[in-house]
Every structure is written in structure tokens, then in C-alpha cells.
Length: 178
Image 1: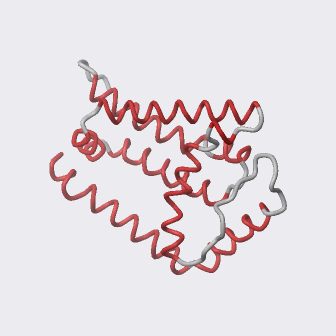
Image 2 (image 1 turned 30 degrees about the vertical axis):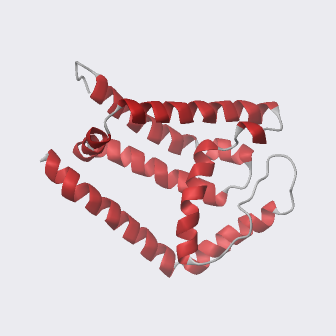
């Protein structure tokens, strides 16, 4: 059953979600781009402080999907230490660095195949992880300020962190209590 979930259901779910997202963006392209353009134009008034941007916005469904990786990385790991101008931004960058180190540690300590098969056999972990990824992509697209980003990303970071910690506990525990 776990092998069937790993080989068939997990990739099918990822392909289905990606296809649904592509179709939703394609049919609502006008509204998605209007929202992104309003946020981008609003940010252009402030080039100081904690504002940031992705550069020139290019519109198109495929370009928006390519930008989703950058927005996920922005929501999860920015501000970097060298971008910190104030003490709260510096503390946020230290938190982001610790998240990066914890994520790399969990990925190194667990076997990748066991990690994927655990995701497939435990739908709650997979749901936590995917909902966190989707939330962080949305936050990265719509937020152009580090202060807002640090508040909006709490739910997504918590979901990803808890799913990875549950999986790490399951992989490393002699006494499986979960």
C-alpha cells in the first residue's frame, strides 16, 4: 500500500494540483495580474526601508509559474542577513537562517526515499506541507514589504516546519508514538 501511494498516488496528486493551479490561473489571468500589478505599483512609491521588489514584472501564465519558485524562496528565507537595515529585520534574518539550517539538517539526516514514502503514507503530513507551500507562494506574490512578509508567512512556515519535524521524528524514533 505504501509502495502504491509512493509510485502512483503521490505523483498523481502533485500533477493534479499543478494542473488545477495552471487552469485556474489561465482562466482568471486578468484578475491575478491586476492584483499583482496593484501590489507592484503600490510598492514603487517606497524605495527605502523594508520594501523590496522582483524587478520588472512580465505578464504571462508561464512566467507567473516561473516566478512562483522565487516568491516561495522570498517568503521562506528573506530578508537575508546582508539585507537587514534595522534590528527587527536583522532578528528576522537570523530566524530565516536558522530555518534554512534546520531544513538542510532534516534533509541530510533523513533518507529522501523514506521521506517521500512517509509523505505518501501519512496524508496529514503531506497536507501540512503542501498547504504551507501554497500559502508561502501566495504570500511571496502579494507582499512587497519585509514587515508584512514576516507576519503573513507565519501560517505557511509553521505548516512546513511541523510536517518536516513530524517526519523527522517518525524516521529517527525508536519508539514510534505518533
